[in-house]
Length: 383
Image (tube, rainbow, N blue to C red; front, top):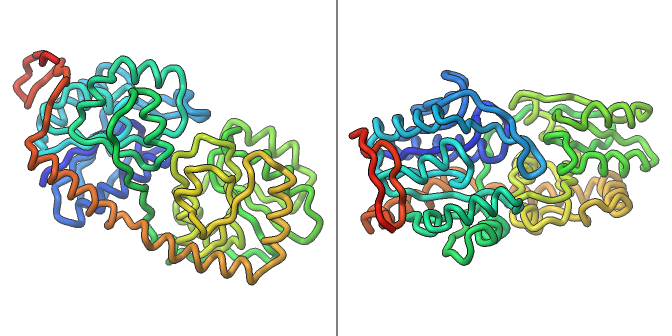
């Protein structure tokens, strides 16, 4: 099968959606499908084994959902997307985040092939709702709609109204984490990995950790707009190590070596893939009690109310003190992570692609405003 996968975000920039796009594309390629990936970015900035990657233009970080999204919203980027899709003549087009302006929205609106959309977002906003209302009929008439969690499905419904959407959870590539060479600290160590911005809750974790008495360590992986301020604020605590942004091998080594991974996010998490990554690295997990984190961690993680410093401090102390509890949690986590492989996810999507193609693609209420099937002529379908 020829499958075109469209990413809304630059694949060279770290991010949850990017991890899913790359992992799914590689897994589909391993199964024998012919895969084209279209995304913002510079030429040759990213490669995915077994696939063809087309970069359609430099990305620009814009504020979205409490973070910054690396998108390409120029008309040139959208035009390049349509040209790449027309040249590929794929059997089906799989668009991640169809409402994000740029390659994803262009492919959703103008593809003359069957389109399946995957929705990741877990928090509504005025722009998202406005886009949802503007393109409600288009989204409702995608040939198939998938959300990565119940939270993401509900977010979509808030934007476009009642709509049928299935849930397929995100996946994790277990192997790189299970084979990582761990960095073993000399004292019980908690680890934070993520973008250092308010939504990720590092300030809450630092406040909780700084109030702990004992020979513990906290290692922080990542960078972001709050990094400089927080480093100054907690500079006097020499138990905290700031590692900045690491490559995949360095990050995986930190995950494998930590005693406890902590995800203190305040909200906006559709699915906690980083929890599964820590579990795949055989590390116990403590996370904010968010629906998206519960969807990932299940009973294998422990949870505290988001933003509650005292509750987080109490659980940190309990888990860092109790080696047996950490070992039990890590064992549960390894077992849970093994059930979220990209090969299993690829198999589920392949079944959905086949079902859509068997139906012939509904193609209802799509506006084809640009190139159609490589013919270069414009037309509009009546709704």
